Length: 224
Ligand code: AMP
Image 1: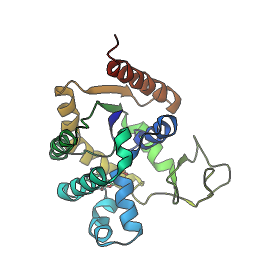
Image 2 (image 1 turned 180 degrees about the vertical axis):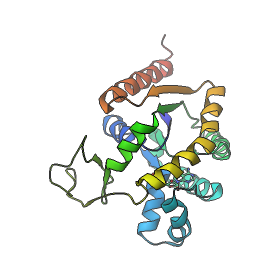
Image 3 (image 1 turned 90 degrees about the vertical axis):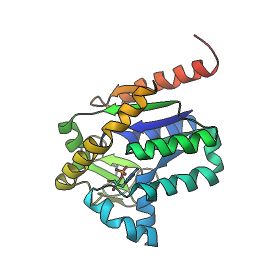
Image 4 (image 1 turned 135 degrees about the horizontal axis):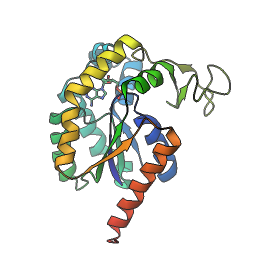
């Protein structure tokens, strides 16, 4: 199964990708996670992108495209399929991704668009907490860790992303509206867009996604 997860920050792309990864063992490829890893390790790339990530702006297309090219050309796990999260975020990235994936004979099956409204997004992002070690996602109200500050899954330290504050969320939303909406139109024009109402709770969203996954399975088996 080869999916692109689209939607505004806070729509639940990461949570959904983690769910699918656990359920179907399909690799979750998140450019945001890859960039944060570079920043954590203070690599040259990490230093180069820090300003963009922390201010909520977009990292230049060539930089993220290169990251994805490297990942897809070298990671054998991708043979099983993939769930792209946070990429593509611009039409240039979407077009380059198509060229790359068609060349590898792994074209996108569907782009799943998680449609969430602004008040829901702000509530989710300001309350979001993340494990520094395994990237598990928590929420102070809706999904708090059993022990404050400690990850249920791996015991790692839980932190708040510096870009999950109201000011930066506003910037990320306007960047999203300007750049990523055309990506949604791009997949719609290809007949690959599946829209999911992401204002609902995560279980309902997961059920909608599983229906899409099953329809891909049936399509691949040539059924219905
Ligand atoms: P995310 O974890 O997907 O919310 O991404 C966090 C930040 O990383 C974004 O606000 C951008 O600064 C940067 N970023 C992640 N993916 C991309 C991308 N595909 N294009 C440009 N910047 C990106």
